[in-house]
Image (cartoon, rainbow, N blue to C red; front, top):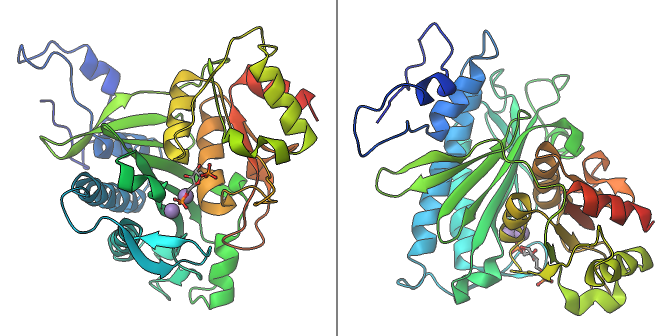
Length: 361
Ligand code: AHG
Ligand code: MN
Ligand code: MN
């Protein structure tokens, strides 16, 4: 295995050069790049970078491994089932939601570069390292997305965004300042990603320089590069939406859906795929192309998904991969959030699908 983790090296780490080096072992015919090595390599492009950002991201990968381990054991332990608490959305929390939230809070709050944490499972943001000049980042997350799928052994996920704390804030934040730091539009995101806990555990992230996927190798406990520079196909074969709500969609969404079903979008015959775990549905959409929709419905007039920690990370990744994410006519990333848990409609997909969607407005 090609190990290359030392931070003091003088020349930038060149993954492509390693690819051309003859293998030392016949059973390892290409070099392994872990997510940590990848982040270090990316960081070397910014001279003077302190390494704090990679340390912050390592908090997320550690949490992801802990959550993955627990998700895999869900059928074996009494952690399965409803925890009984009602979360701030009025939904019943599953035990794994609570666990995943605790793990992420724990792994991130000990990193000194973190100033504010906001989670789907907490009504208010949490201010940490108050007064530290090193506390520069805000992390928002949905610790466990698709949690109603756990009981039936279907894939779930984690979504996250990293933002910079307003540099004009003084070093001690009151609740109001922390809230303001969380309520930044998606255009201010510096990195975002998701983890899908499926037949394998995959971390997909972007720090604004392409979208990369890393699969957890349980044998070595590391996320290794498996999907370099993901590009969403211009047109795919799948549309992904909860069709039971389609009667109450707005006219533009209805019209678009009808065009997709009738093969009128780029003459493509589309198949329907809907897991009901946003992360899984988006992961397929990114890799295979197509379109994912959660428009306004009779029961959720602003759509169901939460802007800050669900729609924004997805929109950031889809755009980074060459696709588009809209909330009605508006770019999701342009929306200025007014509250942490606000919802937004979202339609995200490849170029051809999104052009057709735009044309319906
Ligand atoms: P969460 O488990 O974090 O509350 O999110 C569930 C979300 C999302 O994963 C999925 O896209 C959506 O709920 C599914 O909603 P419907 O059952 O209404 O289709
Ligand atoms: Mn969710
Ligand atoms: Mn959730």
